[in-house]
Amino acid sequence: MSRVVFALWVAFMVVGVYVNAAESTLIKSDGSSTVYPITEAMAEEFQALKKNTVKVTAGISGTGGGFKKFCRAETDMQNASRPITTSEMADCKKTGVKYFELPIAYDATVVAVNMKNNWVSEISVADLKKIWEPAAQGKIMKWNQINPAWPDAEFKLYGAGSDSGTFDYFTEAIVGKSKSSRGDYTASEDDNTLIKGIAGDKFAIGYVPMSYYMENKKTLKALAIIGGEKAPSKTGVLPSKETVENSTYYPLSRPLFIYVNEASAKRPEVKEFVQFYLANSAKLVPEVKYVALPPKAYEMAKGHFNKGRLGSVFNSKESHVGLKIEDLLKKETAM
Image: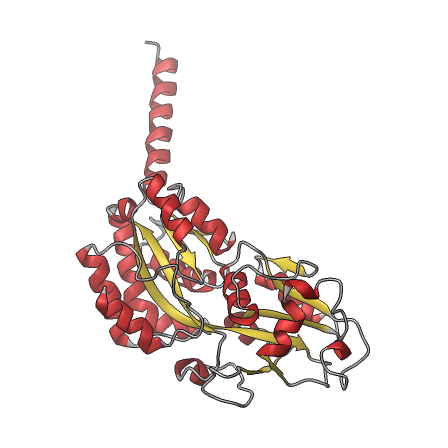
């Protein structure tokens, strides 16, 4: 073997080792744009701790879109703004993907309007249903069709895309059936797109995760929600840390999750990142404008992960609308 050939061979081997090392220290996550800011914050802290020897990527293809990748074992972690569905469980089972379900925060969906909107400060679930149900498409187009005292002006609607867990939850909570919605609105899995749309149109109305609203309070106006018969409060309630924690912001409060592939969790860097995630959630979750769970919830999640408890505490026959923090803890305790 000539010196030139030998040198090229050595260079090739070095590059190959480097690529393999890079691949072995890459943690892939995808899914909910709602959960994305939490995972992004965790990734930044963890990468700094590991001096960037581990890279964590986070996509925002939506909870539904993310589960498609997760159940094909294309990602190590799944960010989810709702629990895994029965069909997604079946998809994971077909491919042999077993998983940990770990609650990491509480969130609220905020119904927001433009700051120049001076005719509405609160809205009922019944009126929201009139706006968003499938039967409203092409028919309910103006504000005064919801309330005669409101302007004779066409509203512009903004909401989550169909791959979003926020879309699933909002439609179930407001319309009464998950994924049941009019289609003539601006839809996106990227919540920043929705923020810009609502902020740019005086007659706009839409829904976004509370953390995105909190970051844009100067350009968006949140509406108080009148929750209806099952609501703890009979008056309009604004979204806040306090109203989410005491369950009065009904029915648009919900838990957030990460799902971790069992096979991936056997890799040291993934296991360490998940443990870091759970150990630091109480501190970092509020910093990115979400509601932290009680310390007991994180301790239970750590226990489930360390003891290898797989699967979901949810099933398809129950509604997740208005799930209280204490009810979530009962489910985790019974697992």
